[in-house]
Length: 350
Ligand SMILES: Nc1nc2c(ncn2[C@@H]2O[C@H](COP(=O)(O)OP(=O)(O)OP(=O)(O)O)[C@@H](O)[C@H]2O)c(=O)[nH]1
Ligand SMILES: [Mg+2]
Image 1 (cartoon, helix red, strand yellow):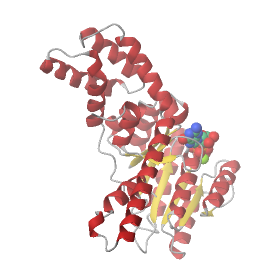
Image 2 (cartoon, rainbow, N blue to C red):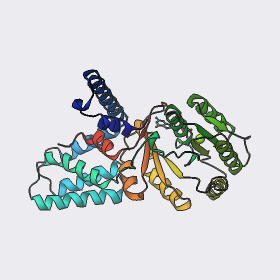
Image 3 (cartoon, rainbow, N blue to C red):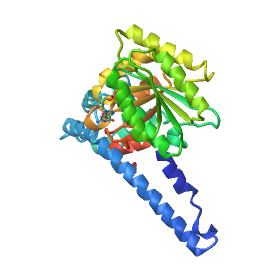
Image 4 (cartoon, protein in one colour):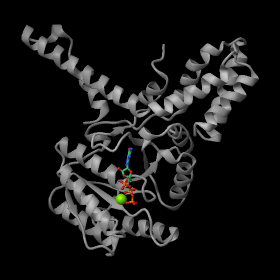
């Protein structure tokens, strides 16, 4: 179940006076309280996952503005450095600083204590609207044809783990999930995916190591269609003999899938390791140039202070960040919500 469903549930609860009887009203009130508890628990988990980024960022910010009272050119210079060293990226940092400069010019005197709130507002408005999440963890499942999601990214980024987590959440939501083991480069890759598929209650389609990944993808789609699957997740290799070879292979996998389902893949998701900071920007650049990427997942935000990459990457690439990984656990893949992300880092707006 997606994060937004929790909000939806909350909103759908009708006012008490509409309920037919008192018992119904109480049940609704309890359902609402339960939904609120779930939202709160999700928030806590997100905050815990982003704690290192938050500490790193605010620690630096605090040191930079210590002893200063007004936001002047020096403070802005220091803020710029804090943003850049927090992996927000140069271009996005420049945009944020410009926006704050404009506000300072307008308001004349700005207290450094206000900086925190202003920064939060500017970052929130800068980040693109997050993908509108609906049911099934944001995936639009149509009856009669599986939704095909192909996962790409360099080795170690977290592709297989993300597929496993996603499969688990989808099966939990009652969906029939097929997984294609199209990373045939390493034998261990197929086994690792097999373990995830089993945990998730999904069906994995595989061939032997070294076989043609496009053929695995083809088989997976055929089998998924024949068995009435709702979602297909295709795992791919992160490393081949060389980069050009990898990109060619990804294109071949893409093309072969459309022979089974004309508009497949419906989504090509690039998985980026957030803890690599600037490297994640570089990978996003290379993959988006070489293949058509339609969504992003940023993993490993739990172990790093480099969570600022999410802000920079969503600003720079204009590709929606769909999910973030905040731990190795099966439940630690979260639907990305721009507002909740900013809130976890900066707290509530007043
Ligand atoms: N802490 C943490 N670890 C993660 C997260 N996502 C993935 N990992 C870990 O990152 C490592 C690599 O993940 P994989 O899923 O194997 O990466 P991959 O992209 O499939 O790698 P290749 O198959 O080599 O291309 C594993 O040890 C995962 O447990 C996350 O959100 N948080
Ligand atoms: Mg893998």
